[in-house]
Amino acid sequence: MADLLPEHPDFLWRNPDPKPSYDAVIVGGGGHGLATAYYLAKNHGMTNIAVLERGWLAGGNMARNTTIIRSNYLWDESAAIYEHSLKLWEKLPEELEYDFLFSQRGVMNLAHTLQDVRESVRRVSANKLNGVDAEWLDVDQVKELCPILNTSDRIRYPVLGATYQPRAGIAKHDHVAWAFARKADELGVDLIQNCEVTGFVKDGNRVVGVKTNRGTIATEKVALCAAGHSSVLAKMAGFDLPIQSHPLQALVSELHEIVHPTVVMSNHVHVYVSQAHKGELVMGAGIDSYNGYGQRGAFHVIEQQMAAAVELFPIFARAHLLRTWGGIVDVTLDASPIVGTSPIENLFVNCGWGTGGFKGTPGAGWTMAHTIATGEPHRLNEPFSLERFVSGALIDEHGAAAVAH
Image (cartoon, rainbow, N blue to C red; front, side, top):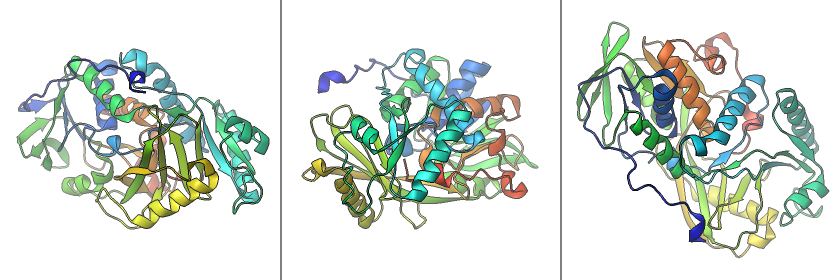
């Protein structure tokens, strides 16, 4: 199967030392930070910028997710930003000149109860009103689309149908990060690894620089794109973020013949399963309930998701677990992100994507870049302001966010 993987360029990006000052500094060298840097340079001509990463580029959640991409969220605001993101995904392999194995194989969300069915049909209708491709599948259609799925009515939670988004799919996450990093570097962005932010320099209520383990860097604008550690950085800057950080685990099996044609998710039995290009099964479930910054979680979550996977896919009963890992997800009270300005002048935040950050990578970068460059939010991220937790204009996506993915 190795011949299915693309060849990588001989050179990806420079490893410069930080300069004394930049027009803008992005804290966090994951997918969102790299996408923000790319779109700042491409869309707004800001090239005297730096991305600061305390470890290595894309070594956090970007390398620790399960790569699912979709836009079938319930509320208008969510559907708009995720659909914009999906449309960007569809153009990115050519635009970034990098084959990151974007595969629009579709995503199914299973319904197991009558309440599941009602909520699912409602979401499909809402998606159609927002121009998002969405279908409701009955049990026979589910079986036709994914023959290996157990649709018997004699199991614990029988499948009663599913939502389906045909344009949804997966991409190879580390390749996505490398693609954004390479293009940002070509445009003149400094990507600085092993550079940990330790504080901020302020003039009154305005940020004017960042303190790092490699010296202080003066800058006119700072953007926080650090996912699970966003609240730590915000506290350094002098304000609080309404997010909680949790471990989120996933796992892969050994390699198998390609038998799984799509992505199947089930909130009720709490598992989702896809099959990567090389043949390994990629599985995830929900977040561990406790707060923490560790990149590992409790064994019982893995045990339960594997039991659920075997219930839905009996063909996988003898599959062997190859490895597990964890990321640190930042969860808001309404399961929607925070993208916009902060109480500190010239300090911008992009956080709270919870379990849906990967799919939002290009959309987050596009809107965050606009916000940084103009000082005002883009129409797509304007509803996702920090102020909504004061005004009460929440965007509750707990249903559509569903099981972690």
